[in-house]
Length: 375
Ligand SMILES: NC(=O)c1ccc[n+]([C@@H]2O[C@H](COP(=O)([O-])OP(=O)(O)OC[C@H]3O[C@@H](n4cnc5c(N)ncnc54)[C@H](O)[C@@H]3O)[C@@H](O)[C@H]2O)c1
Image (tube, rainbow, N blue to C red; front, side):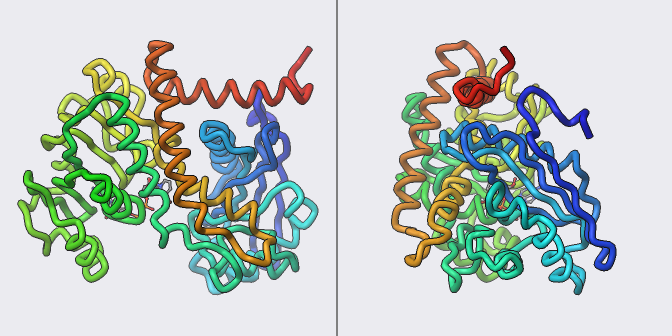
């Protein structure tokens, strides 16, 4: 396990095992120089310690990049989330981490866990603040229902458009799930025209603009098949990436834009709603053609900003103050987007490199001030 350790972390790795349920789990606290460890808790049958360590590191950079005072951490349970014995595994996992939770780590939601699981984790430790992402009836916040990540992606689009003097306000959105639909909704409020959206089923395109209200209603009724019922020209999924528009928001899956198709992107601005939708070669190819790419961990950070409110207010008798979440996400997303694009311009690098550098500089400075760096 020592090969997982480098100059940044992890500071602590705790593995647990419970033979009766068959649960195995791991908590990785990566770097807490800027604040206590926070990141989601996932459950999957083939989870590995390396995977959790990698995700904990991503959290270290994400918190630093959005300039919030939390550290990187992640926990994982190697167990089938569809098993009828899920609760037993969750309870065993929580019990075995009672020395670390909530003092050094607070459970959160990730793949395989939902809000009812967060409630079980709190119950097992007899501590309301042991997890964020609990149901509203327990004082938690339904972030996906608020559409907070998509709201932030749209604000990042608008800030980047202003920064790059983009006047083409036509937008293509790949993916119309939790992130994509909320991005579309907010972009319309901000005066943009959504000309195409897609789901795994296919895409729809109307150069004059789609009716987003109608799309939202169709999504509620038909899910991914909304594209079969919407007005506009029906296209195969993937074709939307190459349509004529000022802005492209990939908000579905990772690895959709690579060296093979980057040259076909006609948008001048790509704002990454999904995690890792572009690879390094695509980012460089797009930059070479003057296309601005706003990195995922800047553009889709609305969810973790909301999670930070959950962290702060998790013991409050008033519950989480939701009135502050949207204005804060708006302000942070705009500031962070502009800061990163400015830093990229000043350093002559691509925004992904500038954002990574900014995060590393912040973490290194915190480590220096706390006397953690080698003499
Ligand atoms: N939900 C969040 O708060 C959040 C936060 C940060 C990052 N993300 C990232 O955003 C991305 C989307 O997450 P989500 O929560 O919206 O997921 P989701 O499951 O709610 O929606 C995904 C959407 O993408 C569509 N899709 C899948 N394959 C596609 C394809 N080949 N072509 C076009 N569309 C396709 C699906 O049909 C669906 O509409 C993921 O990369 C996720 O990691 C989500």
